[in-house]
Length: 128
Image 1 (cartoon, rainbow, N blue to C red):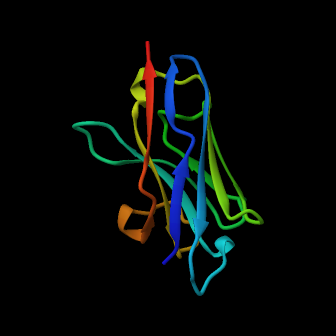
Image 2: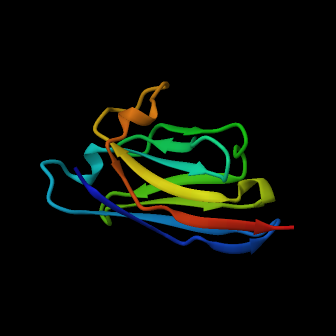
Image 3: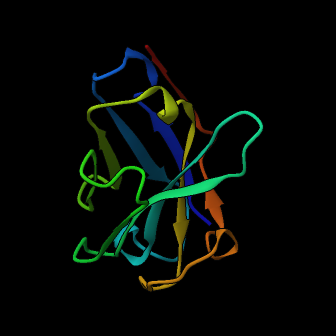
């Protein structure tokens, strides 16, 4: 288990940008680079959806079709931190964004249950 804390959410107008951070800490038997990391989001009345994920050293990435070309996921293993740069934000991006960690290596198909550690979430609100 690893403890995760998100930050960087807020209120922004459509077309604006935000950068989310996810800091990892806690006593574990693995280093940060042992985890595949991901960002999920959940809007009111909707199911949680996978936004993006990144492999242990960042060579492999995945983006949901709805955010391709606008969002960029990255990680700094020396700082035990993952990031999500969000550009050209749309009102449809409004949601609570959560980071998650998995002990699995990066694969094309991963489910919510593959991620055992979760942050508390940070609110992103995009106005028209």
